[in-house]
Length: 109
Image 1: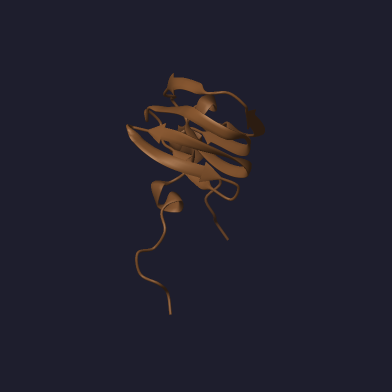
Image 2: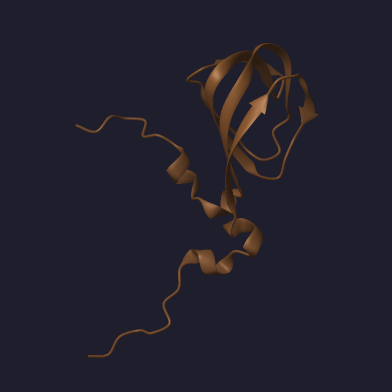
């Protein structure tokens, strides 16, 4: 039986930078000046209480908060009431399909 021996996946088209996914715990204890980055960053807040500004809109984050900062978003943290202890996952968006980061708009029955 004949079969194709040179199959490849879409990841073969990406360079090394896009294959890198980093997971780290991060502690934020003082205000963070305005930043933006080239990677997508997903945060899960394990403990703490603060306000983060993302593209000019303020969001309250606390233990249990989960948020995604896509590349090129401007953000800063002004107010930290309790130090943030977060898990941060950072990657280049080419590594993951956009459909994997969105939820269905209608529930499955």
